[in-house]
Amino acid sequence: MFVQTLRTASWRRLLHTSRIALGDVPARPPSGPNPLDEPTLANVKQKWKQARLAKDSELATLLGGILTDLQYAQKTKMQPNQKPPSIIKMIQKGIKKRTDAAKVFRQAKPAPRVDLAEKEEHEVRILQDLLPK
Image (tube, rainbow, N blue to C red; front, side, top):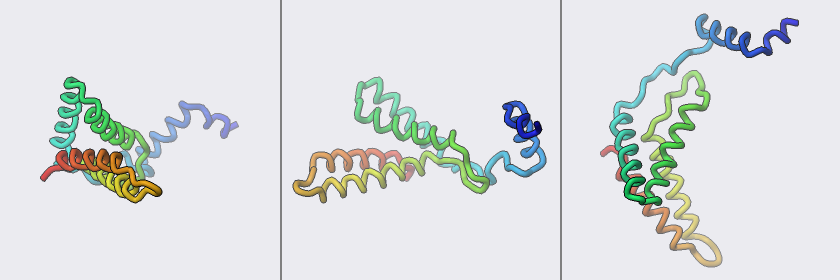
């Protein structure tokens, strides 16, 4: 009977909130956000909006993907000692992913895909410009 009662949403919510109140589950990660995140995030959002207004679909897709990755990381459950997601980390992850893809395209057999490698390298240059100096 008790197990069946815990399956209802209200009891689970009550149990979760009481665990937070008792200190079993930390409500927030211990460290705060990176101070460089706010201006960088504002810059990415502004460039994304400008790219959409200018109908630059390549740039809008690239920046929209970075913003989507950040939003997904913010909504997923974090471990107790994990830092909150950072836009700078998302941009660095995008640079690494595209650099690796360009390397694979250049090493492709039987014929290297130079056109795709150049596209990935162009995106890397765009993302590097977004990082704070």
